[in-house]
View 1 (cartoon, rainbow, N blue to C red):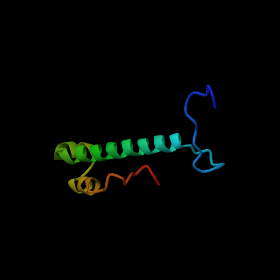
View 2: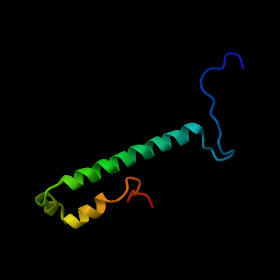
View 3: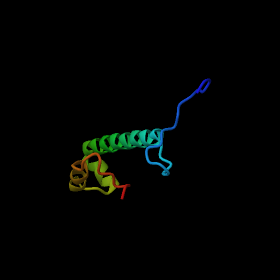
Length: 77
């Protein structure tokens, strides 16, 4: 088409309303969340016993949480 500018929205699943852009954004957000979880778990593992006591956590709690894989998100059911 002459004169058409911009990008076409590609429908991956007809009738579903899901576009390629939507799926890419969702994947990007998921990767960011995984990175956030991994960083938080690493930081938690570096806390000393006094800081853990202030949070009401034991070293065993921290060990259990820090051993979880990055994709294991407690907010996703």
